[in-house]
Image 1 (cartoon, rainbow, N blue to C red):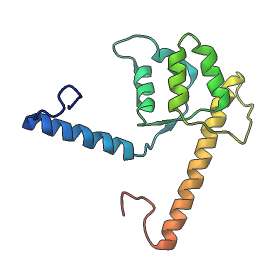
Image 2: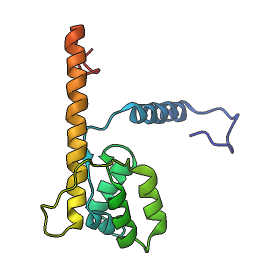
Image 3: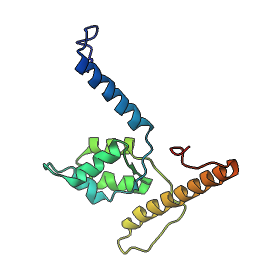
Length: 153
């Protein structure tokens, strides 16, 4: 990969191919729309802070941080993250920066442990918005006589 140190120098063919492939992959990842939407319980993020060779929680977090999944939060969830992960302020700041925020319209009280209701509210809000958006896309496509999925057009 070209850096400031080797700028202006000729690349070998293999370096050129690697450079182009890296750029193409990065562009594809930016355009890709994640299909998996998640709400991460605080314990997943707490476990992600533990050093381990095969840390599944860290992998889940990395997928969300990289934008390969959408990890949604609410202001209440962010408060819980900040309380529980207070020993890792940089980690919390990264979460705030990377995870989109939604504001649920409904307040639930179905889970005994009251703070867990916030995670359910967030998940239901995202599901409601996704269904609404998908319905609108399909209705528009049907009016135009096409398919709602841009990959199929």
